[in-house]
Picture (cartoon, rainbow, N blue to C red):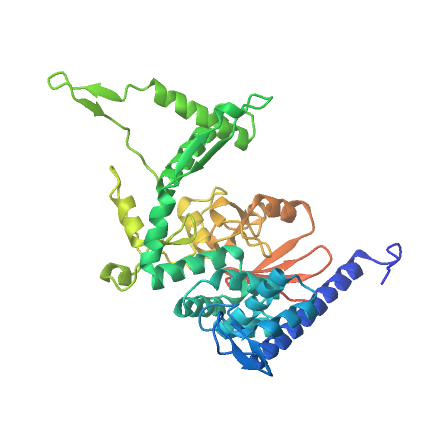
Length: 428
């Protein structure tokens, strides 16, 4: 349908687009239901490589989903793919993901049918769970049913990683060791560009990467305090060289006068990695912890390696009461408030934004200059882009309760952002 945009308002165009999205998703859900019914009617018990007599011809059952999903008729699958108008490989993968959801991820499949999860998100989940054992796939499905509104790509990857750690620890450890063999740090000095710049490429242990990032951040901040007017990114790049040159200037190798032995001295370090573990981890009932900085599951074996690093200090903090609300008089936000807010919200609180809270600004929901308190209940993590949108456009939000936000877009659309993700409120 052609629209005369000269007589149609932006608000009505947005509503038209929203209606089209809903209609598209509804049609896709109908297609999923039809494909699931087709699969139920075309199950073949004979495994691929063998054949069985079906309707007068020899047919083969092909596995296009993970363990526990049915084998489907090879010939019937060819016809279905043709009807769908997809390529043989692409069509087989598409139908396989739907069968993966229907049989191995039933909670996620039900959420798609109920309109709680977009079909494309469920397809991406199925793509990752295809190689998992049945109990691992069931674990991912159950966890996603709890966090049905927050099925982000990063969350899916973390859940699959945790499923492997829980149900196939030998595989997880083998993959960790294999990944460690690929650690590297390359400065491409043979590829200096016309501006005198080079690229640095590295894959590091997380603790080493955290140390490096902290060192670069401190150096960049110090340069800014001393009057360097370059952007933060440029100051971080300059910091790498400054750190390297200081290290080259240090006499770290000392020879013992009596024995001639060379002794290496290294400065102490102070970095902070927040690793969350439960009492069940200490008793051996659970082998998975969580690293706050990466928001990812981590094996306890890896945690032990970090703790055994030289000059490492372990600080055990009690559980932080995220509901604690003790305001301070100043505009500056104390560290204890920052920690509470970022542990409460995890990410930028703009609709569907997944930027980590530790990389966000903390916005006073009620401006400090208008009487807004500097306390966790009035502080909201917003990434720089969405902080600007709130400050310089007509995007607005209200704190309905700690951790829950009601956003209003410039054209009057409403979104609820909370622990379960983003919900579009228009039409409800």
